[in-house]
Structures are given as structure tokens and as C-alpha cells.
Image (cartoon, rainbow, N blue to C red; front, top):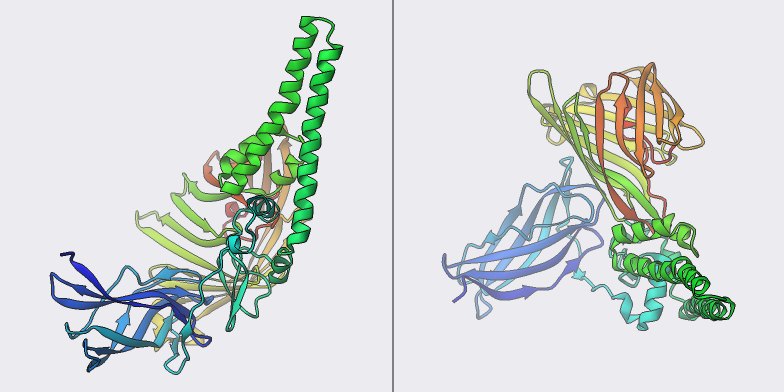
Length: 486
């Protein structure tokens, strides 16, 4: 006999008045401990992180008799929007004769200690996502669709209640016109479902590919006609194979790798092709973003996570102080309709909240000690408040940062190429100079004028034509490198 036996499977549910979905659940029996267990799987659909959930449950025996009424808690979460959590925890029920259960969520505690009472929320069955293959059944049409819209197009846009599913699979609020994850516009996604227009574009592409093949055939024929000697014929065949046939085969392989999500291989193949056919159009969709930064001199390490559109969603930092103590930072970034709106940074003792203007030029910040939190609130007099005002040049480089409020200081930045051939540029921050070293267009090392190195590890993203929001990162001058080179 297996240890865990499933007694009842619970259907997924959602509410327009609660910031979580219940994606799955089951009532289990532990045959070793002879206890009944409840397991639930939640998803956060709100911009604020969740740290605790309480549920109210009624349990019944095999005959439908009420056994127990009680409240249970899920604790110690730190899960932001889209996070799936809870499925690694089980709640032990009070009666081992339980064979059925009814439950509803009563309260949800957010990361800022705000308590939401959702006991009166109406819960409904959560509809399943509809695979895109149900709508586009022809494999060739599907290939064309994903070449145009990117490989992360797996579902049909669907509205339900106050929410909608995006083609990338993310859950959005009905008021969000753009998906918060992939940043695509809902109406524009729905317009791509015009199968007749899609078929026309497929036909044009196939026609163009057929034309290339015919030109290849004509070229082969001309080779045989024009070649006056075995050496000339061999040379013509060589040129035909190396300049047309093999590049075209590589081009088709690269598009297939994009569809499969094998971005590293696709990037390498398209880069080798250069301007062959429309390779450059697909190359424009690739972005390299740093996932790890290491400052050797200052003993600082940072790890970054991004969403599918290449936007920073989480950052973890570790700073080693002069006394050997390590200070850890964790920052969670929140977006609305594709734009960065807020972030929360936490250390062991302190919290930093930041809100960002729509144009990214102003950042309003507040900081306070965790010890000053009383009943979920902080005395305003114990908060530090300050504002960052940024200016940018035409290449979106930060040219100045002015800090006002409880702290006041200004940093100015100037950029220049030092050696275009060696791919080195520099910036100057109020007298301190930093040198940026690139490899194949990727920023992979920053060095200050004292030869201290900052090393970067990058990851490749394919954004299907969507410009990822990088924005302004933090306060340290060496941290202000930019996506666009000067």
C-alpha cells in the first residue's frame, strides 16, 4: 500500500475579490501516520507579494456527516505576482475519518503586513487555458504564427470574470490592456487570430522560399551551361553551395530553433549568416541581459531574474562589510501594463519601497526599520523619504541622478568611445571613471580607473520584437550601465 492515498480531488477556483487563485487541491490520507491531509496549490495574481493565507474548512465523514469546523493557516510565503506556491506544504486535519471537505479562504496577509478579508468573496470554477493548437490546427500555419509572434505563444486569449489569460499563459486583470508578463497588447493578440490573413502571409513566405529554390535550380543549370572546364564548373558549384544552398539551409534551421525555443543555437546561426535574406530582422529580437554581477574589489555579488519579456523581476545582492559581516538584499520589481511601477527591497533589518513614474525619470523612495513596524504600520516620522530625478541622453544612457529629500546629492555621467575596434567605452561619474568592455556586443566587464573589475554573466532572451524594459537600477554608479551602447 502506498503511503499517500488520494481521497478527493478539488477543482481549481478563483474569485474577482481575492488576489489568489486556487489552481489545484486534494484531500489525502497518510496511511503510515493514519492522518488526513489537505494540500492546496495557490497562484498570486496581484502586484503585491503574499506571505500568509488562512482558510476556513468543514470536514465530513464518508456518510456526509459533519466532523469538524475549523481554521487553518498557510504561513511564511514570500511570493510575488504569478508565483505558484503552497503545493509543497500539507495541512494535517483534526479528524482521520475525514473523507470530504469544503473550504474557503478567509484572510490573506500581504508582504507589507496588510490583511485582506475575503471571507465574503464569491468563488467560481477556474476555466482551463485553451491551447493555441485548438485554434490553429494546421502545423504550417502554427509555424508561421510563431515566427511572427514569438515561440511563447501557447494559448488562446480568454476572458473570465475580471481576468484574462494571455497567449503566453500569464493571468491579467481585465483593466490591463497589455499583458504584464510578455507586454503584448490584448487587442493586437486577438487580431493575430485572422487565419485567412495568416494563410496569405504563409503563402507569400512559401512563395519566396520557392523562388529562392528555383533560383538555386537555375543557378545550377547555368553552372552546367557556362562551365567551360571541369575547374570552372567545380568553382561555380562551390560558390553556389557556399553562398546560397548552405546559407539557406542554415537560415531554415535557425528559424526552427527559434520556434523550439533553442535561442543560443538560433542566435549563433543567424549571426553567422549576417544579412542573408531577412536574418537581421530576427537578430533584432535577441537581447543579452546580465544574470550575475560580481565586484571583486568590493566583495559584492548580485543575481538577477527576468520574465519572458526580459524585464528584471527579482534581484538578490550580497555585500561583505569591512568587519566581515555579509548584508543580503532582496528586491522584487512589479509591473503594470508593461511598465515598472514599484519595487520592494529588504535587508535583515530594513525595508526600502520605491515607486516609479511612467517615463522612468522619477523614483519616489521611503525607507524604514523593521523594528519600527507596529500593528502593520510605521510612524511617518520614523520613515526616511527621498526622490531620485534622472535625465537621459538620446541613447537612453543615464546622464545625471539628483537625490533630494532626507538625503541630497547629485551624480553626473558622461559617456564616450575609447576604442571602437576593441569595443571599449567609458563613463565618468562626478570624477570617477568606469570602463565598459564588450564581447560581440555584450557588456561582460566593467573596470574602474584603479583596475578593479566588475564581471557580468549574461543570458540570451528572444523578445519577438518587444523592447525589454531595463530602466534605472539602484544607486551605485557602476551599477548604471545601460542596454544601448554609446
